[in-house]
Length: 68
Image (tube, rainbow, N blue to C red; front, side, top):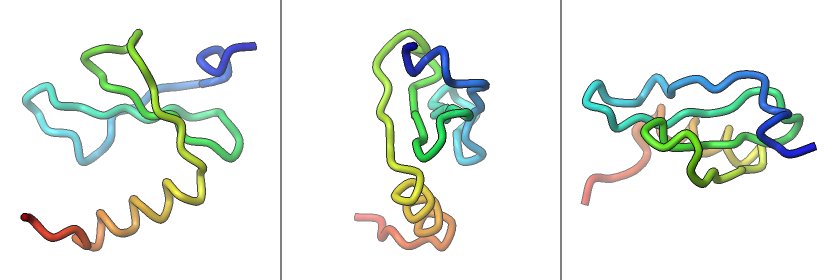
């Protein structure tokens, strides 16, 4: 079965902007988090390890990335 069929639901990130620059994450893959561009739902996806994704989101929420 393809990974797309295993995704139970795609949802927009709460950090997505209102101008169409949206990231969607998929639910339903144990241990993995698929991410796609909402403007291109049939386009490529990136699949992250769930632990790595959680670490990334934690740093983003803490404003841990300096603006260059």
